[in-house]
Image (cartoon, rainbow, N blue to C red; front, top):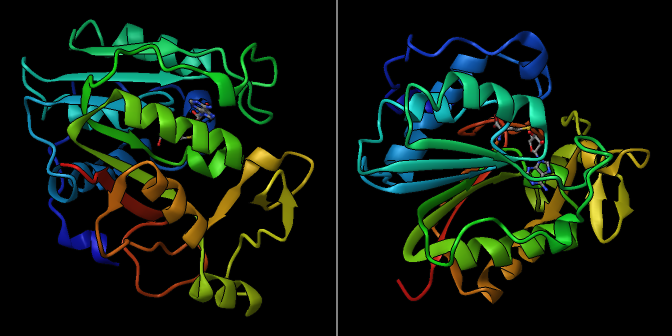
Length: 258
Ligand SMILES: C[S@@+](CC[C@H](N)C(=O)[O-])C[C@H]1O[C@@H](n2cnc3c(N)ncnc32)[C@H](O)[C@@H]1O
């Protein structure tokens, strides 16, 4: 497991842990440990600097935000949005008062799993930020819950709000020869046997529960929008792979013109 090679942040004991119900709403697990695992992917892989502006798409209840509170300085900023209100409310109450440059907002966007009463379609949602606003944009386990056309629209929005010198880190499930072979050999807990709206899904009743994209198709979506993917792609353990960095696959992309 390669993540051991990265340095961990010091824990921020000023921010309490969210209630278990909120942590369960973003998939459960060890809230602090997962945030600490990702911190060096942001700072070492994506070279996030303390003065930079960050956008966390689908920020949940602040699992990635909390470790960043000790990294970003007063010139830096963090914005997060999510379609679930309780996590955002918790972050506004527990993070923003201590770190006013950390802002959180709700997007009332539909998702069958996370916000079935959402008013706006993800494929039409305009992020509430100006063009060229962010140095670093990330989505941890969000494209694993979005259908293909909606994901493509979010990439359009990312390109709009990211600066030409920006970087974007995406975690996802990528189907390629290796992951498909492992799925076929029964090594993977997720099998993505069904196709809904041009998207490989693990189950059809709630397609957004777990979504995968063909690797070449994902690369095409990014390259069509003038994003270049840093190599190597950091593949994950989700499909039973023995050599991995994290659980999900990690892509780091940046505007080609940079
Ligand atoms: C598995 S959780 C991950 C949360 C957070 N990124 C983290 O790593 O702690 C998936 C998150 O994506 C959010 N989400 C799903 N669809 C979304 C959308 N269209 N826009 C923004 N967030 C979305 C969900 O509400 C949920 O909080």
